[in-house]
Length: 76
Image 1 (cartoon, rainbow, N blue to C red):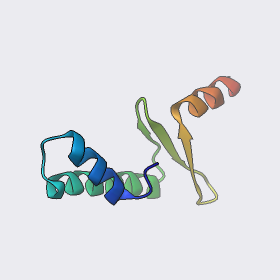
Image 2 (cartoon, one colour):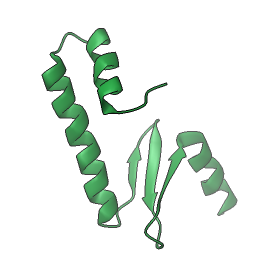
Image 3 (cartoon, one colour):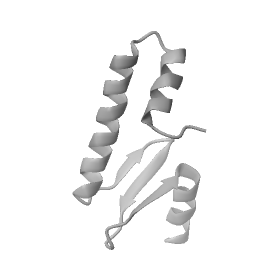
């Protein structure tokens, strides 16, 4: 189980021929972009992975793609 961004960097660096510094930059930029968009109230979906939604209460809900599909089906 991945616990933090450094764990992600280490895992990816074992599988791809890029430096840890480059991978770290990409991972950090990705999370920063997701965080920034959520803070603006945008919905963020990483297709085939997860959807992040900022609720009106200010809390962020994170759904796996399967959970999101179930929620979408229930709302119809």
